[in-house]
View: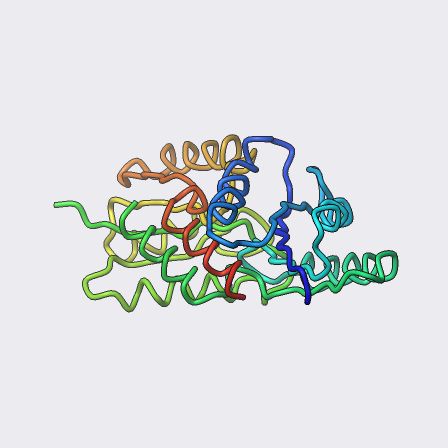
Length: 121
Length: 121
């Protein structure tokens, strides 16, 4: 039986305050009953990176990890950089199954929430 | 009586496909009954910029424009770059009232939608 984990993958930024909503998002997921272990990971400027997050989840017993890109759009970071990182991690961690979803910002329900915020804010 | 408009302010990227969810978000808002005019604007790499978007909404009759940063976190782009842009636009367009909300990614309902996506995707 596979033991799942979730990585919330963000861009990263110099200002540590930038990561606050990512930490809140991870906390929300950790509060869901029976939710799998969750880690943040960042493309640049913040840690852990993708490999570090995978290793942390493996240390918690995960062997099937879903990477959720917390990006609005799918530009070069998701079309070019992330696939390279995923392939590197698959090569160096052959016992882990790595899956990757579409950018969260492409999801209809996320767009609905953003639209509601834009009207209400 | 003020005539409102909404600007969805994103980072911008080289790949035009990056903007697709932003366009879908703008279309969603335009589909809401009695929604004010909506424009996208980008910090860099895509057009229109903030001034161009303001001018387009003014041409549609808006005089009170709410800028909604479609960013997950509040890093240097929102804490440093956007306030400078807003002040420049206020100086050069004194007949327009410019308001600005928090980053959309700080909103609880947006975080809820992101969390649900991360579990479901």
